[in-house]
Length: 187
Image 1: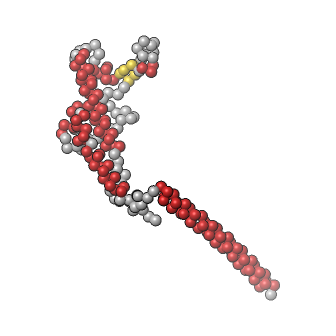
Image 2 (image 1 turned 60 degrees about the vertical axis):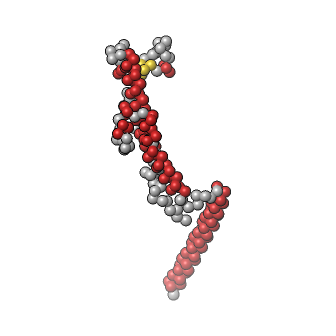
Image 3 (image 1 turned 180 degrees about the horizontal axis):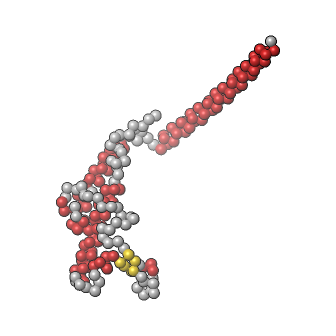
């Protein structure tokens, strides 16, 4: 029984993680740049802690904190930097010109940025509903699986029986040929 999968239900059509990661990366970068801008404004342009130090290093609390003798700074990526867990930046495909730069991407831009994602999920949901037997219960599916397994068991048994009969026939034919060959030599 071949299952027909609708063309709209392809991996590319339902890939939401890539788009969601892109949106979240833009949002996080915008939030981080806003925080660093706020910190720079609060300490002044020539404050005791410069913007590059505050955004690229920090004290690791798991190493004992500021009162510990082991309070070496650890490096954290700057906003927009590529790490092993952040995706590479992808050009925006949204129609909002303000959402193309990370600095102008805010929480109010999220609904418009996620519209395409929402529509993609709606199309995928509709495509799944068109699949055959989507309304069957688990009990019905388990019953069909049991029937198919029984059918397979019978077919395997039949093939084994046919193989054994074929081997027996081949042995009989070989012995018959051997007997005929001996008769021809004797005569």
